Length: 116
Image (cartoon, rainbow, N blue to C red; front, side, top):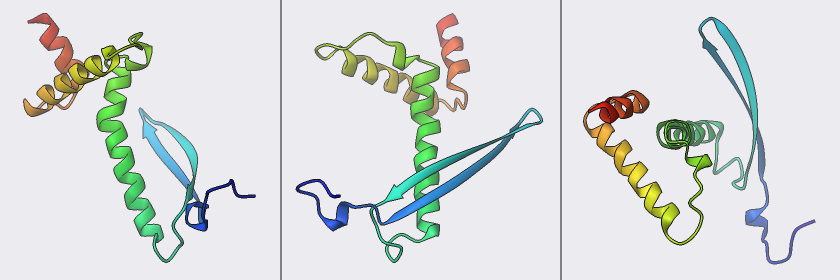
């Protein structure tokens, strides 16, 4: 069943299963993710899907993970007015500053900056 106002172009055309395996400190873990894609196989080949997924995770690991873990963004209480946007801008500025100075570990760079 298709919701009112949707077209066939917005329906799922492909279902994708991605299995990720990683080894950290000698321990191997496996994660399976499932995606739905609204493009048919002719417009989104497996190679395209892999590239898009890798780029998405690159952004997730480089920006969102840092904001969530280092700056504990999900725990922040600013929810009204422009407070949340201002705090997010300050976090992004701090991350950008650390990256332009060559920092690869934002948590370490933040701790170092706090001590100065």
